[in-house]
Amino acid sequence: MKMIMAVIKPFKLDDVREALSDLGVDGMTVTEVKGFGRQKGHAEIYRGAEYTVHFLPKVKLEVAVKADLVESVIEAIAAAAQTGKIGDGKIFTYDMSSVLRVRTGETGDEAL
Picture 1: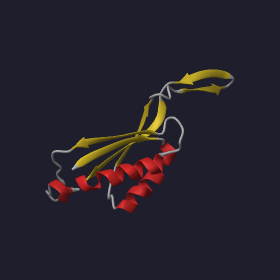
Picture 2: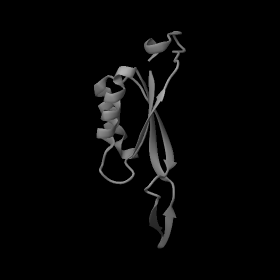
Picture 3: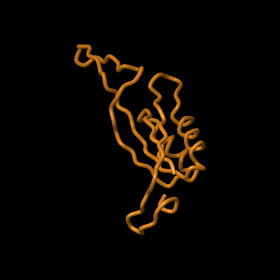
Picture 4: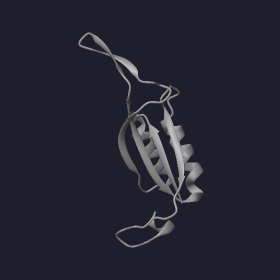
């Protein structure tokens, strides 16, 4: 089992959700976050004064999947989230040693 964590642009969330649903991914956790990478923020003008926004709004997705789905999920997220511009995001993969569905007590792949 693997945990896939992706940080993407907020307006691409629905595209990514649809792409994962098409693969049969049943659930995900979504968190609104702020951050920066190479993009390093941007300048905005408010009431005639220019200021720099250092932390940009992003969306963090967390998806737990069976090991055999990892590559297809990563490819689906990358394709759906890509705009071709700086700040498209990153995808991280972690090993999961265990999972437990609280309601039923199921563990392992059955709990996903």
